[in-house]
Length: 321
Image (spheres, one colour):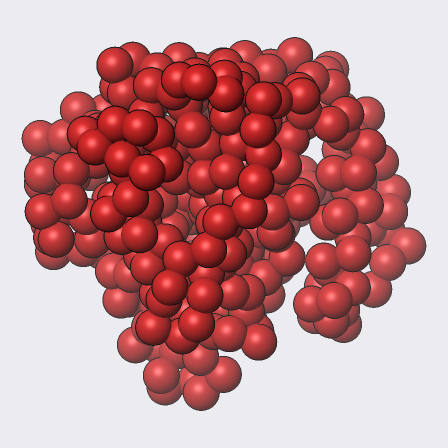
């Protein structure tokens, strides 16, 4: 590991606390999804709640496997400038609407958009492609109900997500392109875009000690993809699991890609930004120095986190306009 790299002092105490807790806990391979979900909830429980908004309510979209639940956030009861469809992170296994409630509130407050968070089914109870199927059903419903949701039949839509949610947002951008559904932006925060996990530089140098570990990524993959080894091998190269392996990225919505210096997913996020640019897609890539995975969820505790949320909100506002 390079010796001249330093964690930001803003994030160091949080990383120290996570490492201390991990030292006394069973390995990820000895943990159940329920235990990991409880740990994730505890990790984000110390983050202050997001801003009070004019309206927060539940929604539901009909999907091929039943209703897909959602939650909408609006800062202004009268007007919004468009829709941000948000897909939460958590490795497709441990996140939910509650772990990202404060993030969605901040995005709604800062962007002026109607933010709709999708409560897709989690693995391993519902393995790949359940999360993709639910996310697509939700996005189609939102597309078909733009007018009822916002009062504007032509309300623009952006997709957004962090980590596993960034994966789903990237996949939705590809599916929307293929279905000729117009999206104005894809806002990807440290997205997981390559399920092969083949040992990028950041996966090696940041693979232990920085909140998200390479072992945890392997555990997420084992829980998300099929429990049948041969089927899982095919799924990990499916573009709906690894969007960087899509035959073409041309024609997808303009992208913002955010990465963190100490994140194992840093290099695949950067590679996805480069691949989008090579395909002719307008891309902005911001790598936040000194930051670890999950930093986006730590606003306002960590000032850089607040800056990252503001960058996403500003990009959304510009594209929705």
